[in-house]
Length: 92
Image (cartoon, rainbow, N blue to C red):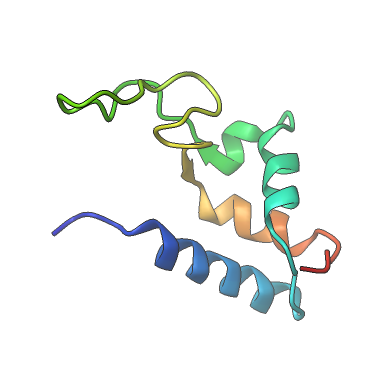
């Protein structure tokens, strides 16, 4: 208990952004990367910079910005959903 599964959480986030936009936003990856690479990164994602997923079998450590453990970090949904809703639709 306490773990959040990523796929359902991102599906919910995408559905909320679609609902706020009043339309389907289409493919979100290019939009997420644009937002993550913007000067407002810290308002859209909480960067996780301490930890790893090594657990005795090899893995990765966290880094500032994008890393293979946490991706861009934890979404800050209060800012990320409106930012996604304001983007143009991209066909998937």
